[in-house]
Structure formats: structure tokens, C-alpha cells
Image 1 (cartoon, rainbow, N blue to C red):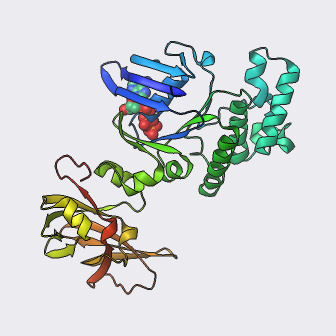
Image 2 (image 1 turned 30 degrees about the horizontal axis):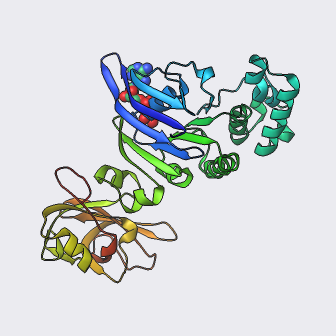
Image 3 (image 1 turned 30 degrees about the vertical axis):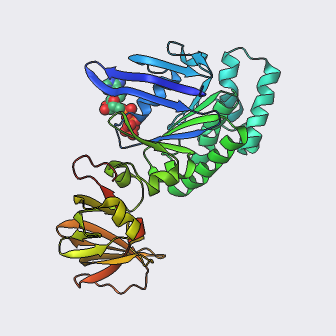
Amino acid sequence: MSHVELNQITKSFGATSVIPPLDLAIEKGEFLVLVGPSGCGKTTTLRMLAGLESASSGSIRINGRDVTHARPGERDCAMVFQNYALYPHMSVRENIGYAMKVHGTDKAVIAERVTEASRLLGLDPYLDRKPKNLSGGQRQRVAIGRALVRHPQVFLFDEPLSNLDAKLRVEMRTEIKLLQRRLGTTAVYVTHDQVEAMTMADRVVVMRAGRIEQAADPITLYERPANRFVANFIGSPAMNFLNATIADGAVRVGDQVLSLPPDEAARLGARGSVIFGIRPEHMRASEHQAALSFVPEAVEPLGPHTLVLGRLAGEKITAQVDPRFPVTPGAPCTVPIDMTQAHFFDPQTEQRL
Ligand code: ATP
């Protein structure tokens, strides 16, 4: 039995169904990230786990116990919100200990847990400060501290880093991940940021319109996306998709022919129409190299590499090349394609071939 189980969970708001039957099992100690575009149902799923939203049907088990109808306080989950929700008139110490105080926890236990959490989070020097005298990162740590002191079965994070600046976000995501690993507490984390999802998760669940498109570890998602939606969502800049055909061991894009590695040619056979997917970073030299020519419209130097943006057979294309790669907007260029990294999708179902 898994530590957290959602069985055939659905959610409707009035007549609108936002989550069709959804099954999800989370293992003890796992860091699971729910990711997907705005409105896909990530937060609703998390809130149903927390008990802040009731499921329309289906059941939820946490640590073997059916909590489908349990109140939030009875689920042994601790949630960290995007807006921190700290009490402005209370000190850091009081904020962290407040929930335990309300539950009538012994004062000595509260003090001990607050000390433990503040040490873990580096908040000792700030225990007597009010939230307004803290930086965004420190406030976020206090919000995490409030969740930690409860020693919950499950941490639930709802976009906890989205109010922080880019640099702090990167620091805090490492901190949260290390802390979770150290404590071994099961975590469910919601974000719309695929980089956050990929860097923090043991397993990423990609959602669209309330459905799970793919649930896999980050590398599998990147290397073997189950369909075009996942392929497009994971990776930055996004994968290029070109209408193509496969015949005679080669991919044809417009009038250009790219030969396939023999094993791929054998696997794919004569397919006819396909969607050919290639990530910008895989437009590089390799032992199974092909080439694509197109006219660049813009060239964007980023330092470690340069992005070349253009159009090929009417479709947008982005290549990520070495900064020394010779390229000028308006002048046709030919970029190498690593065919071992090519992806193919069915043009009708958009599923991976
Ligand atoms: P975001 O990244 O924008 O927060 P999300 O993936 O977390 O999006 P949800 O907040 O779970 O998405 O919303 C899923 C769908 O349910 C959306 O279409 C939203 O408009 C709808 N929804 C959420 N809460 C309610 C509500 N209380 N009443 C009606 N519709 C709601």
C-alpha cells in the first residue's frame, strides 16, 4: 500500500467538471511534483488532499487511513502556501508555534519543536522579529517552519516560491529539497514552473485539464515524453515540432532528408506522416548526424550558447548552437541534428511513436 492514495477522485464545481476520475499513489518519503499549465487542476488536487476542498467522488487514503471525509486538521498534512499567510502581529517564534498552541500542545514541547525547526531553517537569529522585518526568503522559511513543527505525515506545497525573486527561488528550492530528504517526509509540491518540477522531484506528474498526461522521474520525462503535450511542456527552450514523413530509413521535412540511425529506422519502418520532434539543444554534432537548413530571423546570444530562431516549411524553429557558430539573420544556415535524440509522435493522437 502506498503512503498517499487518491482513488478515482473527481471534482466538479457546480456543473463544471475540473478533475475527471484521477488515480495517484505516492510512496513514503517521495517528493512528488504536480506540474501543468494554469487551470489544469494542480491546486484543486492538492487542496483535496489537504481537506480544504471536498472531493466530489472517490476516496483518499493517507498512511493507510481513509481520510476522504476527514477535516483538514485530522489528516496529518501540513500545507505551505504561496502567500506564506503569516500573522503580522506575531513574532517568528509565535508564528511557528501558533498551530500547536491552538491545539493545546504542552509549552515545553512547543519550545522544543520551534527550536528544532528554526535551527533546521537557519531562523534562530530572527525568532523575536515580526514578519515585516524579514526578507521574502526568511518569511518563506517561517512558513515552512510552521509546517515542520507539526511533524506531519505529508508536506503539501502550493507554489511556495512564486513570490520570490529568481535567485532566491533557486536557493530555496535546493533548501526545501535537502530538508525534505533529511526528514524523509512525503511531499506533494504544486508548481507551474517545469524547471522547479524537474530539479526538485523524485517523480513529476504532468497534468492537463485535470488528467495525468505522464507521471515519471525527471529524466524519463525529458528523454521519453509520452506525447507531444509533455514533450512541449518539459524542456526550455521548448522542443521543435515539424511535420514530416518517414520512408526508406529517413525523415523528410519539406524537401530535406535526414537519415535515421539503423535501429530507429528498423523500429519505425515506413510510417508515412509523423511529427518529428527535436530539442534545440540536440541540434548538434553526433555520430548519427543529419542537418537542417533554414533562414534565421533572429539570433540571441546567451553567453554559454546562442539561440537561432527562424522558420522551416512555415513552422517556427529554434536551434541552440555554440556561440562561435557562424550565423547571421537573413542568411540561410545549416545546423547539425543529433538523430539519436529525435522524437516522433503520431500526428492524429500525438502519442509517442
Ligand atoms: P494555477 O496554476 O493557475 O493555480 P491550477 O492548475 O492550480 O492553476 P486549479 O486552481 O486547480 O488549477 O483550477 C482548476 C480549474 O478549476 C480551473 O478551471 C478553475 O477555474 C476551476 N476552479 C478552481 N476553484 C474553483 C471554484 N472554487 N469554483 C469554480 N471553479 C473553480
